[in-house]
Image (tube, rainbow, N blue to C red):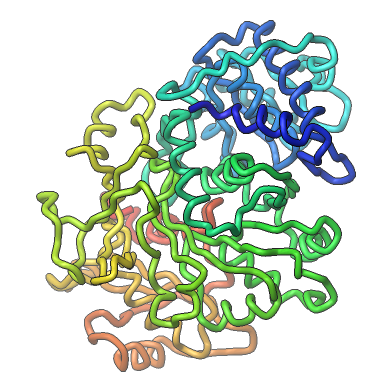
Length: 516
């Protein structure tokens, strides 16, 4: 299996059909394939050889589509850079992976001098923006126009296809090595589980940043079955509503926070969202109230939740559309995807009885090759041939998986284990709370105490005592927050996950240790 096969199939079966839409720019499959072959030739002329890494630092656009295919076309390895990192974090990923060719758009071109200052090994920089080509960079369109198309090497299988640096909620970024087989196996799983919601001839709208593996998965899924893509550079509710009305996408992936912002926009009722047949979401479950509102706003859409991680390319489980009609299942992450084994184990990797909390582990053809240049971390994560997710959860008798917490987010207070997700679920039922996160903070008596960070709904007020009393009606007293902070917003990762390490930092910095 090789990842460029889908482009060859698209040209064979619909050369003049739309492949990409970005702003007013529309390109067909035939045009894209020619540009990809020329860009691959240009990369080869720049000295990029089989297995070399090529990075892209840019907002979502049709360049992403051409970049991914072109790098694979000439046997290279893609390395999409997290656009929300600092220059120091960016150069860490470039230097550690020895990535010497970088594509940048207008937004990130001004950062290039700093990136080169931090790492002298950064050689060729290609400007792929709409503005003038900055000094010291090569022009993307010039490279495509100035090189003849080359033949696709059609390399695939277990060859390295991409380095996707983790930028989630724990630890320093690690380069996750994914092969062609890994990515395609996950793609086949998602398409099989989508029950036709991602369909041939469909159109996927990309709002989530495409350096993230969940967004790449949506892109690959539409490529696999054939269809087109609409690229959205950044999430802005009003702009997205207009694009849906004008460009008529059939599928999109959002996090619940994005769905909430769309539905809260005063103009949501003025736009026709009926073209959308599937809304995928992840990073967190969706509430029954939000789901009901979303179903009304997207009258023809089926909703599906995806649970996964970059190391699984990224698919582990999905909560199918029909499951969303059962309120009891809305807190579930879903059931194992086709081709993926999932189980819940104790610290000795022995499978736990159903309903008992343990660590979630998974395996399949989509499981990563390992972490770049990190053999010990790879061995720890893949021990016994299973990817150890670091997530605590349990499975019911019907195979539905429930995520309880990150293992390291478990709070030990007075010798009792408290899973923060359980406390957050209780807090979410309080009428004044819009969103929340629960962490453990140092306590001289209990070791750790349960601490809540809360965003209130507009116009609402409450107190710590009131919240504690409310929680005690739903969970044990020792699980109820002893202290609270009230904030305007919660820090989020690019995947929409709450960055609990940022919330913990001010509480643990002075202790000389950290639970983050």
